[in-house]
Image (cartoon, rainbow, N blue to C red; front, side):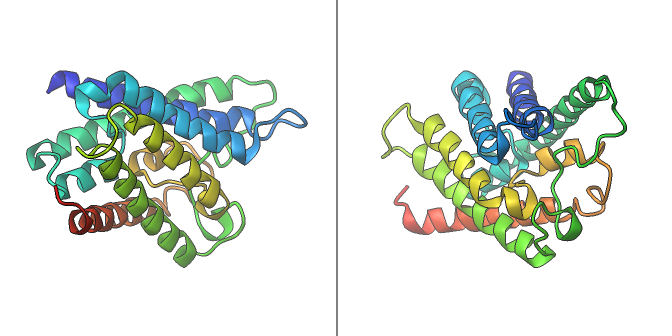
Length: 228
């Protein structure tokens, strides 16, 4: 178990450091910034690389919603859920600490700003409401679980699951960065919210509730579709 938790810690650290780091440092640079497309790809690459690297150790969840969905689908033991959640959240927070240390040592630093946090209303990149963020996060997390469960099922081509999962997360970000800055991952939302200016902490509840509901729905849909 200690090795599994270590893998979840480092996998979630890499997801937040790589994904949120790309948004903080590289997305808004004039003329050469990577923009939302680059950030979307960065999040997909973090999950794909870590799924290939440590997926065989821990299952490669890196996300409390994924752990819950896999448990509901019968792929993960309930007794391991809370330890996985703790490892994932701690990994996300440590990554956010490192990002803050780097960002705060930039010339002219005046504060973290949004710090790649998630939000709705005034905190949404394009001003989407709480209802819009809630619906988007539920639907997209549900489909993320369906992608994960399907690509790792016994009937899927062996060895390609990390690619499908990484590209799935990239697509999710392409859809929802304008809406909520994309969570579908409560750990990712928690880590950066602790450092962000604005309403990120006050709105964090939505980015736990919606992904967990979405994961449960996705797992239930997969169980209805699958013969496993």
